[in-house]
Image (cartoon, rainbow, N blue to C red; front, side, top):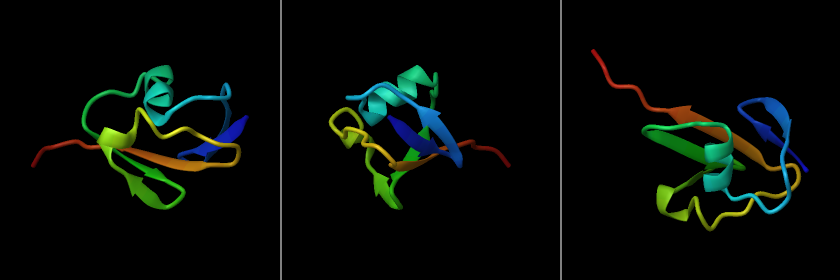
Length: 65
C-alpha cells in the first residue's frame, strides 16, 4: 500500500502500525507523529494501523540553544 511520509509517497506492507513504520525507517529518539493532520500520542503508535493514502508527518525533536 502507498502512504505519504513527510511529503514523499512510500510503498509499505499492509498491516503496519506507526511503531512498525518507525522501526522500518530506523527513526529513533524523541519525536512527534501526525497522522492525517492529527497528533498521534506515542502510547498509541503500537496499536494505530496505517491505511492506504494515509498522510504522516514525523518530526524528530532536537534540543539545543
